[in-house]
Length: 427
Image (cartoon, rainbow, N blue to C red; front, side):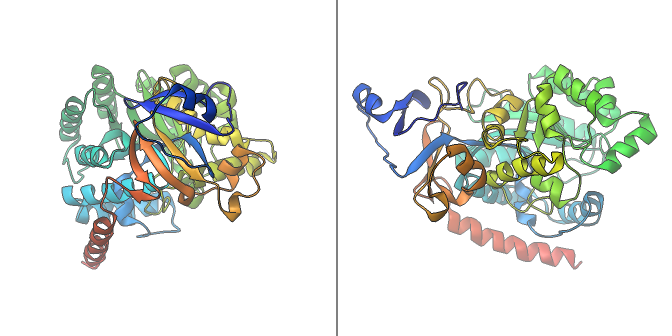
């Protein structure tokens, strides 16, 4: 995914000190380097690690708890009550481990998260060896790690200080949404993020109801209302942006807001179809995200998001040329890096960038025959085809085996939590 979108046949990547030292034809690199370790995968392709620009990792433990519901009903009747009864530091740690395991196994090397006890998610990400842009959630009602927004802001500042300049963690401030976070708190979140030169993460115009409520109470859209509050004056990533119009898109472009498109979630919750082709045409930086795996989407597979992103734009525009395969894959790699403001270090295979990369098996029925690599990446290959994963040059998945996480233990703990959660819902 370099600027020329090169596809190198019989290629190789040389890694040194966690960075890409060289990339090119294998025969050339073999003449230049004498590696201490060599990984040969002749029936595979090497690609940049996938970048998840929006999720809620610990919600993996609530996977499938409530499905086939509208967003507000899902949140208010099921998710918020289940979280109030079950979310503890231990819950967050094990949920984040389960999420990190699934993400790494399916080729995600960077994830963007909004949740509670975010410092524990950061600790777990470092333990797993996965890169994270992690936002401490701030919301206008009592939640498991903060009974007031003021306490949430205190937690966020402590989080920003603790993980400043971390090689794997980019700490962020994450006000939940315009409809759950008071205006004065939103302003305080922006001020805090700017003070520490950190990103701000927020949900934006996910549903028609959110937009209609904003027009009714504020006489304008959520994008324009947040702009009036100054929220976009700084590094920002907005999740969803389904119900945005041309004026909203112009603001997002002008303010440099990165947008996380979540096709599976938007489809599953019937939230609508984001105007992705319009945003791309306007020059907005777009990435992809699976959202949370507890009703809005039930997995973290970014290959699925690439496939659905492309197809959803085709069917909504009635144009099969809308969002071609190569551009859909770009949204999961270099596009996501641009949206997060990390494109100087990740998102493509280029010398000098961090060695976040994946190896994808091509020796399978669904990968044959090979005519176009981007077609395969978007429409044929799956997360389960990933065999090896490197984050900053460190192998974290080798021949499909996790090297940093205890898979058997995580699955046992997941079953224990399932039983606890079911019991809590009967209370």
